[in-house]
Length: 293
Image 1 (cartoon, rainbow, N blue to C red):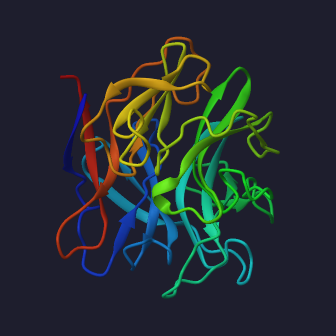
Image 2: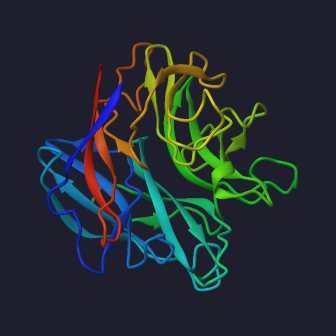
């Protein structure tokens, strides 16, 4: 498989504006929705969460801020970013990462995952809990003892499966791995999988139901056989390499028609949005399309 990029009109390069970390894309009626981090620095650690809509997935209209920073000094008081969306129980659940650490020269984020809820994809959004719904492990040897980030959700076996990336204390961003947490309800509580980490790599999380199992895109972070691949697990837990992917999306969010369906015949993803790169520009959003060779 290979990946081609196309413009995402109206979300492209803009002086002084950073857009990155797009959510998965949902379709409500005849309208596509996406959420993303928006700020003014490359890393995105000064961000709030915004959203845009489209009729065709190519030309977008930026609407407004969906979720601002939390209470100053709180766990998400300095920045909120890497949003993702869950549609369940007649509501919209906006998962996001947050940090209490302000951006500075020796910045090292302490990210955790929270959730807000709305009756409409256009908001308004209300934080469900004062505390994060998923936090880093208290055990120093755990793969996610430093931070958790980048939620991506599916519904499977009557439960909510929250895939996320974690980083261990003392490790670098090049050493992140992927885990899962399960819940009976969208708002949690979420219980981490005893088999974590389920993939020994992956700096961004993009998973979807495919066939009877779960597929995942892994970028350039991970050991040989994991990096630059599509991984697959029939049980959603025990992953192995399915395809090589030399040019996968960078921090992509996909349109996943079966993302929130209980299915044993999930379809592959075909398109989405990713972070775009251009010399002299802050990150922006562009469309990606998967093609079979």
